[in-house]
Every structure is written in structure tokens, then in C-alpha cells.
Length: 315
Image (cartoon, rainbow, N blue to C red; front, side):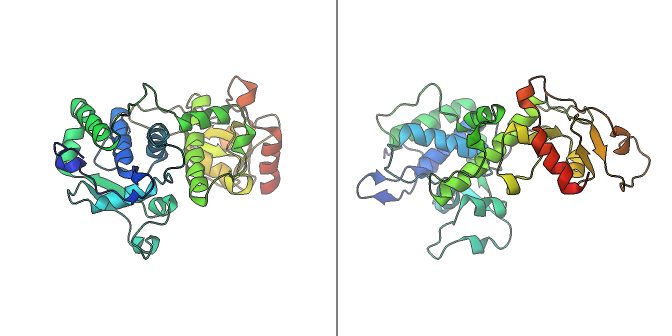
């Protein structure tokens, strides 16, 4: 490691007798820098999001020879808090100690998410990384110090985008939890699939609620329109577009609770026992209204899945 490396990039790394220093921490920092570049980090609050996991996976794929180390995003996210530079401060909900092992490590990505873990960068580093030129300098310093002789490709692999393509084509790969890797890899894949579903379904509906027509988008991040599973994911493990609809939050909740359903002709059904006050936001006036569906028939809800929802709630 070069003595010219600034303090905030001097990392304490684990090691392997066979393959040398563990690359997890510098790869996570490369992913964080890229997240700044892409507008994924807008405040000094870094969460273990699917988008950040995706970037971590991308850098790992191009910088770490296959089989050298186990790819574990949650480990550097947790252990960066121990750096002497104070670069990374971890915040969690009370009770997080239950997610920490006896050897003072973290159990899983799910543990970070369950306890709403987020990291806060040292104030001066956060201010530095708000500047694109400074990010470029630190990216090069990380590469030179921890991945000497290696260069980054013009375009990184994008597993999240690949999953979105699978969703749009109703790929069988998006039905059922993958069982090809370790438990940690399967957990990571579920998080990635869920995020891809949340992103792709509203996109295919033009970010418009299929029932109300409400269309909400924002340049600052996710819009208001939800991706709704027709058959719950916990029952189907199905993240394909045929098991999804784009709904605004109130219609999403009404659908999940069986207050509304969708007929075979794609019109809205409203439960007979629904009681609501008179309001411009009432649900009953949408009874019998046709859904606003994507033009491409491949992106519309599957008839058998809508039938399962009607059967479940007695429509």
C-alpha cells in the first residue's frame, strides 16, 4: 500500500494464505463512489440497498478471480465501522446485538435490513465525495493501492438490469428461490429480485396505477406507484410480470386485503361488504372499470393468477 494513500482510504484488510488481502472493503468503497456517480446517494445515509449490492457484485465480478474469496456484501458493510480513520459509522435499530456473532461479525444481509442498518461517512469524506473530480481521484487511488495492474471496464456488469429483463419476459428463472449457491447467495438474490420487480413493473405500466390512472414519477428516486404481486410472493416465489400489477398505494393495500379483485375481463371487482365514506378517493366508484394495462399482452396479468386471487377472497 502506497504511503501516499490518504488516511480515509487506508483499510485494515483480512487475508488468505493462498490469495492475499481480502478485497471486500475496497470493493464496497468503489461501489459507494459509483452510487454517488449514479445519484443513488443523496444524503449522508448509505443503506444496504439492492442497487448498492448490485454495484458491489459488479466490481467483484471484474476485479476478483473466481473462487479466490467468498463474495459477501454484508461483511464489509458491517466491518468498515472498525476502521481507525472513523470513515464509516454504522447506525441500527435497538437489539442489533442479536444479529452479531460471538466472533463479532454480522450474520447476514437480512440482519442488516431487518435492523434498518445504515452507514454514515465521516463528514469531511462525505463532503469530498459530493464532488465528482474528488471521487475520480479516490477511485483511482483505491484501484492502484488494492488492485494494482488491473483496470475497470467502460461498462460494469448489471445483474439488476438482467433480472428486470427476466421479469419482462416472464422467465421461469424468476419463479422459485434459486438453490444453486449458498444460503447467503440465495438471500442476496431474493433481495435483488424484489428490487428488480419493484422497479420494472411500474416501468412497464408507464408508472401509472392500473386502476385509478394515477401517474407519479420523480427524478429524485422511486415514484409513488407500487409493484403489486397478484399471488403473494410468500406463496408463489413468482417475480414475473405475469404475477404483477402497478397500483397506487391505497389500491395496492385494498387488493392485498381482498377489498378489491380483478375479473376475468380485467374489470375491477369491489367486495360487497366494503364500507367507506363519501370521498373523491373512494374505491367503490371504480367497480366495473377496465384496467389500464400495458399494450404488450406479455406484460399483462396472467388469467390463472387473477383467478387465484378471486378464489382466495371469495369473489
